[in-house]
Length: 249
Image (cartoon, rainbow, N blue to C red; front, top):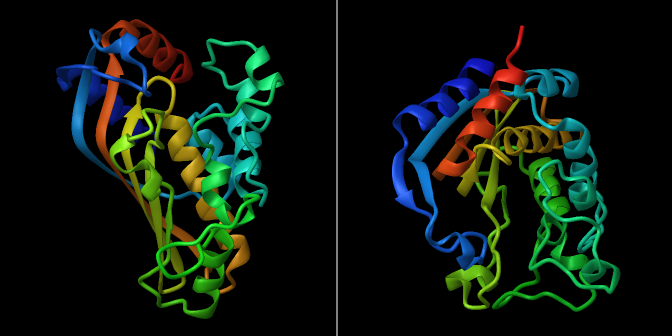
């Protein structure tokens, strides 16, 4: 796995196409910045069976990621939550905005648990599902082809609210011969701040599903599809420095 992750980062650094950043995370301050981009990166990774091996193989910022993952699966749609205060790449301190009750445009725990938000959520005809519904679907129908947890919601379509929208589109799970596999669809991924953590968090989700669904005997592979895998040119030095540090023998 380490080689697969390293290889894709190296491909991005060596072969990434220079592309204007445009609006990034709903912020026009980056519109004149240049990104190196790999389009439609397709990464297949065998998922380790233990959390310790996930940490070792991904070299993620796992102390922060573990805290954040517990927020994601905790059943409470917090916004802003607590883990954001310890995000390793934050450029802000705990400021008055969040002390005054302001919120992010979204959090992943809101998207995992939309039915738990204070006001009722309903689609065109039916109530929204959540992570627990996907788990129950796999328990009740281990051959299902429908076990999909969407993160990108209709309110994100067109970004008409002019705010940040989720990078992750969603996760599809399926069981084959006792192994759990997952397709992880993500529209945009920053190599410096998110790539390793995104892989680790997705694997943690697979592990969590494995603890809940008795039909799952082992973890299989994860297919990660990234439409836009990128790094800002101004971040190249920081990315190379980080990769050199974490890959030291």
